[in-house]
Amino acid sequence: MRTFIGKIVDFLKNMRNIGTYVRILEAKSIARRMFVTNSFDGLLSSLGVILGSYISGASNPTNYIGGVAGAAFAMGLFSGFIATYMSERAERLRELHETEKAMLHSLRGSIYEKAARLVPLYVAMWSGFGAVVLPLVAILPFIIKESVGLNISIRSLVYISTSIILAELFMLGVYLGHISGENKLISGLRLALIGLAAVIFFAFIGVIV
Image (tube, rainbow, N blue to C red; front, side, top):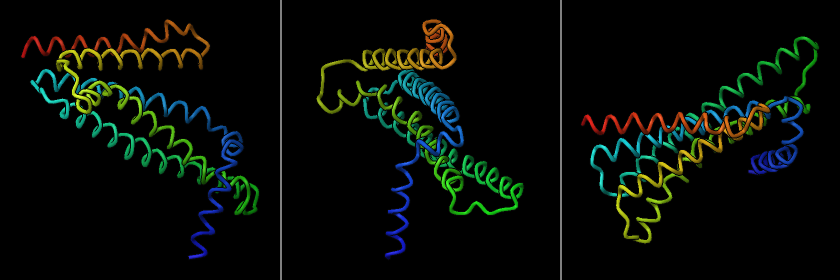
């Protein structure tokens, strides 16, 4: 029991230095890419769930909440967090072992080993965050409707949530523009237009159906 508690204490102490570990392995750019990629995937998936549910005639806010939240947590927890952590951990440990072979010296207990074991967790947290939080923000209108009982139609809720998703895509694009040094407005509009194209596609499907 004491050994387990000791490991927890050591882990928390090491997490205080996560910024240093991230800089050592230059992992900030990887975390940014995973955040943006999974945020984008999560938002477009949520858009598909919302518009698909509306086209199919879903009239209960719970259907929209359950669909988006279920997809967001499945993607965020299993793909965004767990899969990212396992793949990033494997890559970091491979790099660590190759470094040990080149140096003919064990790095066990060194700052490099700690970084190799903790940085994947940092990357995975950002990856999962993007896949879960932004989609949940998009369904806030449905959550408020279900909790407070506002007198607002499902169509209006779909319009509002769709607008939120497009706005989030725009801000994601602005963030990418900030990173790349490109025009932030154009970068934001680029991602928003992708979302708008998806809306038009679903509207077309709705007309056909």
